[in-house]
Length: 161
Image (spheres, rainbow, N blue to C red):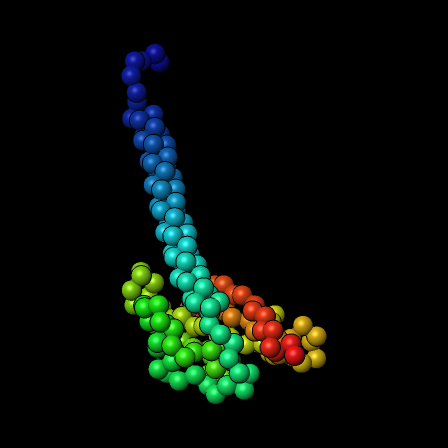
């Protein structure tokens, strides 16, 4: 049979192929947008964590037997101004992880900042481990929703004495 034009079956096959290609393209665009959004969120988290670590870089160590920081000390340290108050790394270490919620900056969630001697971050200050439990090193860590975002280890020259 020699006929001109498309038959209904040929048209259905072409339509199905076009539908599959269109759905694949739409899925790819959606996946790309989702991945981009995740990368942007991670970048904002890292920028915020870096800001907290920069603040912790200028906080003095204070006496190693410092009392725990007060809620007021922590509030003054984490507010938006450049006045850090009376917080010291040793008073933050004695306080334990400072947890707070940030409602702005597009990052709703729980932040936690800690200063401790758990240098490998395994949750235990192991005095049997030669790299931990040292009086001259303090690990400052920033967590977002329970996930470690960034950390830095500071050296206290007075702790080495």
